[in-house]
Image (cartoon, rainbow, N blue to C red; front, side, top):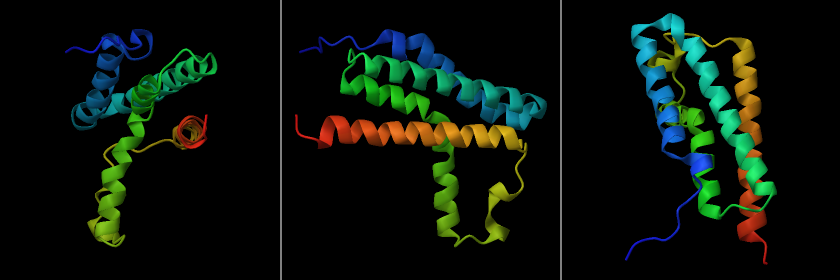
Length: 141
């Protein structure tokens, strides 16, 4: 038996997913090969995440989207933040010892503006995730 649901290709179609994945892997490869291009890739990845998040908010406001579409869209929009998960788990494992922290000396540093904008984007996406879960799943219909 096959699934009859086709999804939302304008939100997370093949081309959009490939672009996200290439940006994520390109960022990793560029930090080792071409360090001068990393800030541009970071900025473009943040723009892609912001664009995906904005499209998700617009589609949710029109109520023309299913919960699985929101979940997949949030996974793509929150993608740049998943790189922090192993870093913080490692910091917990080593009890925040700076000698064992590999992120203490990054190969390419972040600018202050990029860090603040990424923080605001992360807060906005997290608030949307929490609102969506409470609004659609926790409250009785």
